[in-house]
Length: 151
Image (cartoon, rainbow, N blue to C red; front, side, top):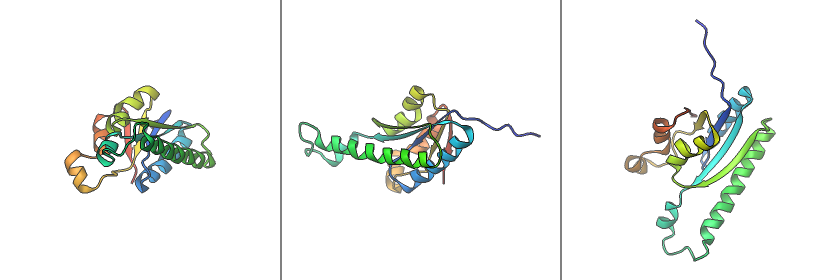
């Protein structure tokens, strides 16, 4: 029996600064290199965190949100440089605002024709996971593409 090897063209790796996301980025880079594929590195900024964490602290011009965007943009730019040093030239960085679940599972892959999502197992603590479920669990159920969980 011969095994058919899946080829991927557009790989998405969501990152959030966690160790699990860094491992997922390594795996996604390896897969992209083997497949000569494009790699999209994505961070999703959930605006709900600002209404809860910074209630009443965001001034009228949104300095806290802007600074968060700048920090995240710098973070994903560093990841792109790291991936390029590993020999993958076809890589893009993206920062989006929205619900991480729907952006990662549906919206971003629809816009960018991703045929594989590589992500870490979870970034939430056990209590949050019990109450809201992990983003990874949701993505594995809702994504139209293949999903690989890097451990």
